[in-house]
Length: 264
Image (cartoon, rainbow, N blue to C red; front, top):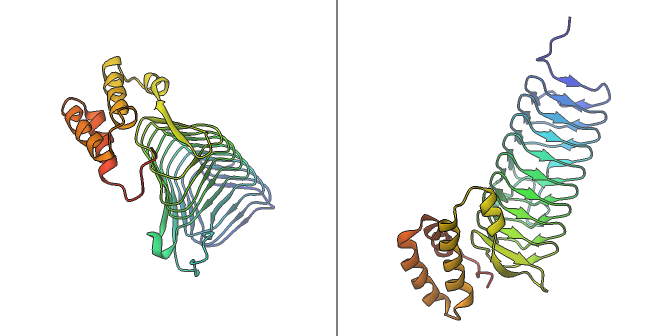
């Protein structure tokens, strides 16, 4: 009689003695799971994957073949110090995705939230902080120290420069190169480096934003990008608009907390 709660490990897989696998975890052929790796209940790992530690992966994730998870930071300053990768629950990680651990001088942790989709060949570099319910299309790439809010879509072949922030509900278009902070709700399109091109209205509708909320966000976008005002003056306009909109307050808080130039 078999125990359905026990991990199912293919005979060709190599699992380090210190790795901890939860109930119902499945490990495919020729996959290597290193020291100090913890994998939550119900997670499935395909063939030919590499998972290095220290890494903690939550429950019910789907990791497809040839993914490389928890590798050393691709940073010349990384000197082998102890750093971590933390991945939440119910993420889908497709073929040849790479996600690196953090660096000692960058906070030490790369963190992924819940319910994200990482399509084939996407890359999340060291010390990135990714929220939940995001979609990374094929070949989307984050450099080090990037912060991505919830419900962000990054289209195929898009790239984000190190230390940039992408606000919640933003949409980065195919092939766009982002070298500044992208506020919440904003769409970015390819034009040399990516440039703002309106708000992600369709995405907001799909997530239940009513017309009044979307109209307030549009007014904020016009103040920030279409009014011709200096950034300091645009912030004052946003402060006035924020009095009647939680979403505009969120956008204004994003602007006031950044260290990099705003993508404008």
